Length: 213
Image (cartoon, rainbow, N blue to C red; front, side, top):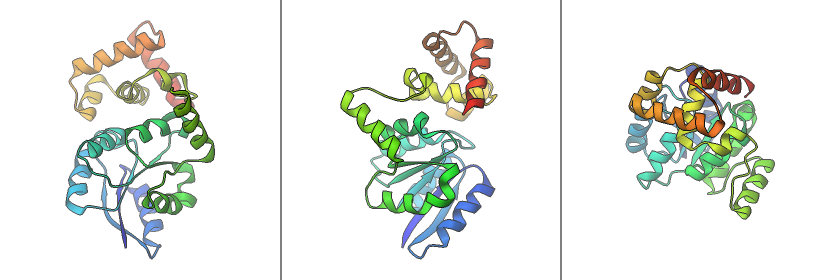
């Protein structure tokens, strides 16, 4: 029996995914978490066979969790499920150490095949994204479609995304376990890379970007 740890901060969505997993005879839900600290604790306590991770969590973010797990030399397969388009984050999460990326809009029909794929030690991506990732590796550079995604570091992308969701500097700092000064520094780097003049323009730009996702 393959044991699954489900990490998502939406209880209703977790319940839906749990029902799909528990309907399979070869899969078992061994635990649920809604934040990075809780997930880190359960990874060590439960030792699941697969982590199913959302990028948006109640405390911290999925990308942060992936890097933390891999930094501890834990090789458990990780499948990311997110509302964000594949071309925005799939390459980032794969490079961070994840084994697959699935859009939430397709999760109802594809969650079980995706879990089984990563259990076999294979990547789970759409055909289009797999070709794009291969092309970027062959060319030695990122071929992500989004201009924002191609210019910002992973941490800058997290800050930018949270700004677009209406988070204050103080809340971003708390969620990502950073100082407000460090968040302000990331904001300055984002403005420089995206040629944005001031903080008000940065927030408007980030909100507009998030609404287009």
